[in-house]
Length: 265
Ligand SMILES: O=P(O)(O)O[C@H]1O[C@H](CO)[C@@H](O)[C@H]1O
Ligand SMILES: Nc1nc2[nH]cnc2c(=O)[nH]1
Image (cartoon, rainbow, N blue to C red; front, side, top):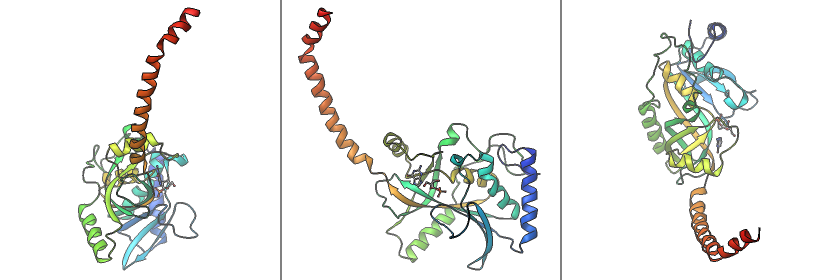
């Protein structure tokens, strides 16, 4: 009898049935789960398929693709796999995704270790942990200030040095928006001001679910494109300011024409 998000009794049954089904079909008892986002495609796998196996001597369960809000899935469905991982005995969740770079130091192709996140749908009440809480799964109001394991981030940074990847491995704050459109220029600038280093349409809900049920989390984001609006914008703004001043000056200089217009009518 486990519960995650706004799930009904039927969903809770699904958790138990799915877990039993999975456990009966594999000898693997994975301690690590990996959600492969758009940046980590396993060829020939249909969307949102699970597979378990041994990677580098470690028993892992992989999820190819994920459920996104913009596809019409409920919050509960998006975090369903995380609950299943927990029930399978998983202790560490690794989330990966593709995102748009907001930090102006980033380049396309950079790998961003996620050190924190901003949950934009959560601000609007779209949070998978809304609804009745089952204390056996996690506490009512979980802490999110340490969502991404410091130890695993440190390990990843050490590894990036060993592999000579330091030129393109960064750390940053990932922001989730619901999508499905990419950001407007104004939205991009807003997210930059808020301290977001990259933006995507996933991951954060899964991480909230994972933290709720006590999983250790590590996240990697591949920067697919770079928003380079801020510099151009500020240059444009300067020009616009000059134009505005010019318009105002001209308007005032010709204001007698307006008066004449009004008088005529
Ligand atoms: O986050 P993942 O699943 O990698 O997918 C990313 O890529 C899609 C946009 O191309 C969005 O769904 C975005 O979130
Ligand atoms: N919202 C959003 N999602 C993405 N996924 C990959 N790139 C992007 C992006 O630039 N914005």
